[in-house]
Image 1 (cartoon, rainbow, N blue to C red):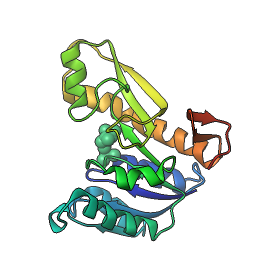
Image 2: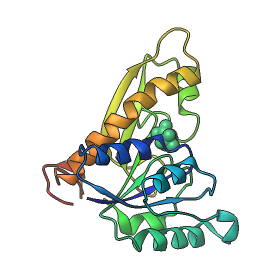
Image 3: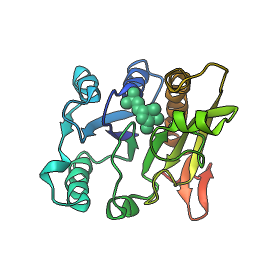
Image 4: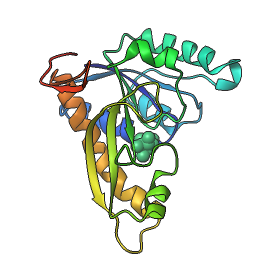
Length: 203
Ligand code: GRF
């Protein structure tokens, strides 16, 4: 499975992918890493493993659509089978997402459909839920709204603050993302007309 990874920051999910590939635990190849932030640590993780890494800035484009067009022409140039948003913090335009339906996934730190958007750990604490977690979903034009592929759950425990809860979730994000990528690589999951299909051999 040829991957393009989009990341805006720390890049721990990207690193988990790169390490799993290096250990022979994920049959995939990261063909390129792309960011909207030149300072993203994710770019360093990519370059450290000789994966081409590129950043462009939204400031240089007049509209979201123009930025996305530039970003996705870079992405398309590495011919990915799958585009993985791993901490990519920019909202993507429908024009960019719709033609790529079923070929873009995102990892989001909540049990979707709960707590879309930002500050999900604080949202979970404020709501007083007993369980929180992470979701991998197909990306659609609706922010954090596409069909959920897989989730990992963690308990919320007394004394949690957003940071402690985020760390507990992140620990589960990496294996969740890798497990999902393995299923996608094996062609066992795809996006069908009625949502996520298993054993569909769609990819
Ligand atoms: C993760 O919590 C991910 O779910 C969210 O942003 C964070 C990215 O972390 N979308 P990292 O950059 O992969 O370390």
